[in-house]
Length: 498
Image (tube, rainbow, N blue to C red; front, side, top):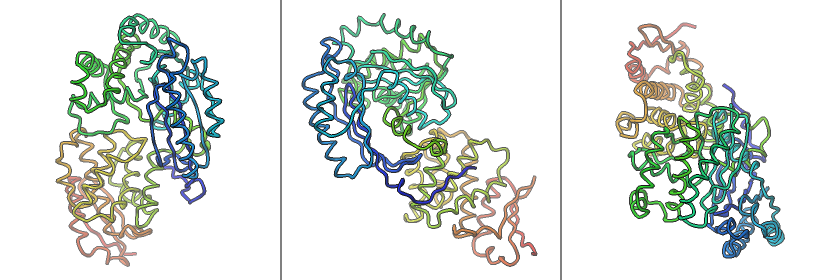
C-alpha cells in the first residue's frame, strides 16, 4: 500500500484562497496545506444574485453589484489578515454573459488588488469535474453542476476528463415561474442536444451545486436516512424521480417545515426538480451521487503537484490524523501489516479501508475511556474525509469503536443498518484485532515485532517470542479469545523458542 512522505514542510501551512463570483452567490474558501487532504480553514458565502435579470436585460443586477463590491472588499481584508499565500479569483456565468461583466470585474480587481478571470462555460464544466475527481479519483460518469444561471456537464472516465458542455438552464436564466413553466420544451431540447454530444452512455451522474445538495437533503428526510453527510450520498434514478416529483407537488411552506431548508433554497429546488426529471427522461442514468466538491476544489486541485494528485485522499487524511493526534505516529502501518494475516481475499478497496482504520486506531486516546467508542463514530461520520462512501465511513467508525470498550452497544445503533451484515462482522473483527495489537504493543513503534498472528482452518494463533513472553501477561489471553470468537475460531497462545 503506497504511503506518501509525511515529513513536515512549508506546504503544510500554505494557505490558498479561492474566490468564486457566481451568478447567485459570491464565495471564499481558504484551504490550508498544499496536499491531497487540505484543511478547510475558512468558508463564507454571500447571496448577491448578480445574475438576476442578466438574461432579460443583458446587465448585472445593480443591487447585486453593490453587495458584491462590499463582500469582495471584506474578502480582500480577510485574505490579508489571515496571511493567505495564494489567491485564485474567478467569475462564472453572470459576469460571462453580462454586457457590463468585464467592466465590473475590472473595478473589482482594481479595488481589491485581486486578479480575477472569467471562466468560459467549458472551463467551468471542466473545473467542476476536477473538483469531483478531488473526491472520487477514479470517477466514471457525467458531472452535472447547477449554478444560478448556467448548468455544466462534463464526462469523466477513470479519472480523465472527456467532453464538456454548458447551457443557460439555471433558475436565474428565467425571469419568473411562469416563464420557467413555458420553457419545459426548451429543457428537453437542451438535454437531447447535450446527449447527442456525449461520448458514451453514462450510468452515473455526479451532482455538484447547492440546489442538488438541498434536493438530496429532502430525499434523506423522506427516507429517515441515519447520516447527515451529503457528500457521496447515493440515489437511484427511481428514488430521485420520486423525490423530485414529491417536491413539485408540495408547497414551499411544507418543504421548509419538513426539511428546515431556507425559502431561497426551496425555490431553487423546484427548478432543480424540473431539470432532473427531464435529465432522467433523456439521458437515462441509473444512479446519482452528490458531490460536496466542485469548481473551487477543482481550481485548487489543478495547482497541486502531479505526485500529490495521484495520492489516495483517504490514506492521506488518515495519515494527517495519525500525525497530529496519535501517540506514536507511524505505528499504524505496523499494525496494518500485523492484522492482515487474519483476513483473506481482500479487495484493494477493503485493504485501503483497513489501512485507514489502523492509521486512525490511536487518534482518540485522549478522550475519557467511557466515551472513546462513541467519539470514534462521531468523528468518522462527521470528519471532512474524501475517498470513502457512507458504508465505508460506518465500517471505519464501527471498527474503531470495537478497538475500544463499548463497541457492542455502539453496533446496535440504527445508524449501522446501512452496513451489510458481512461488512459489520468484518469491522468487528478488525476492531478486536486492533484492540489486541494495541494492548500487546502500547501502540509504540516496533512493539509488535515479537508477536505474530496466524489463522488456520480451526485456530487463531498468537505466537510470541520467548524473550518477549512477558507480553503475554495481563488480559492478553482474554482479548485473544474475544478475537477468536469473532472469527469463530479457537484461540491459542504459543510461546516460541528463539
